[in-house]
Length: 110
Image 1 (cartoon, helix red, strand yellow):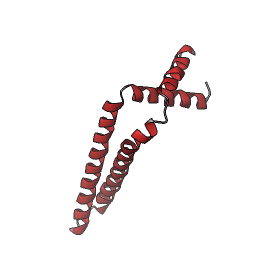
Image 2 (cartoon, rainbow, N blue to C red):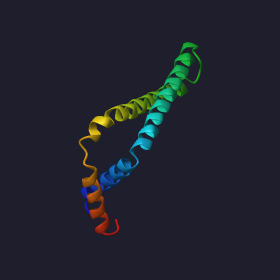
Image 3 (cartoon, helix red, strand yellow):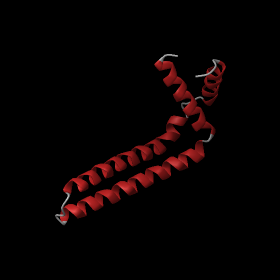
Image 4 (spheres, one colour):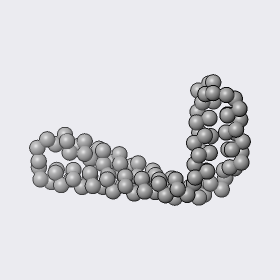
């Protein structure tokens, strides 16, 4: 199987799983987004307070702010995904995704 075919199979299977349990997964990704934003904000606040106090070991606080920024970015990405999903969902044919999954199953083991 070519790398493109493997990627297609992975995407179709993931999309199929998502479509079968859509509401539960949307709630999960919304919670993950909010938790990531909260954690990122907390890490940034700790790093800012540490810099304001002129504490030693400033590389630790630089790492804290970097990880906090990563968490904020992931949280915003998850939140954007959840907000855009209802619009994107209407353009996805669930029956075609299911049919393609069956085709992959008929082709045999991965």
